[in-house]
Length: 213
Image (cartoon, rainbow, N blue to C red):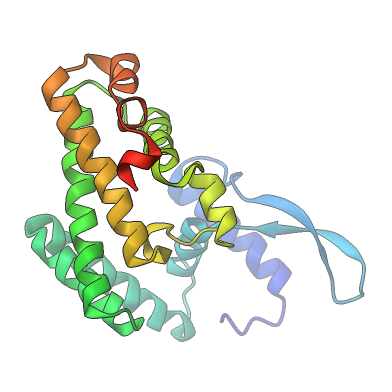
């Protein structure tokens, strides 16, 4: 991308530039042992997706311009979606179509997003904290119809970073929605306060796998 004749020095200078711009040492990039050109395992700087995009933004090269234009476009779309959330749903539908999903599946997937939004809004109202507490309650719902946690189910499907719901069948989406709708209604009826009470009134403790299936 840089067409530098001395990439090691270029990277060293760029890291210093990034540190100066951020006002702190650019030490978040870790080193892992990777195979070098000489065949030996040598410690090499690695970066996650966010860091890599930040690095590309700082590369003053015509070869980096397509990436910068793409980032600008994505940023614009994100701002548009914040102003009009319906745009995010429309883009999601178009993305699913491009990936070859059927119209029936897409309709169920969009409905599952709405159901999930209603559930998380109810959890938020009940004082459940976003993050680990959401994950634990979600696991309970998933176990209600699949007898697996979300992590176990992703492993069962051979997934890594991919979305579990995007890789569910129509039947799986319906079963998962049933669990989330039931949990939402139970929470509204019993009005739990906080995570522990919400866990007691979760779908898993109120409905058996056979009931949902």
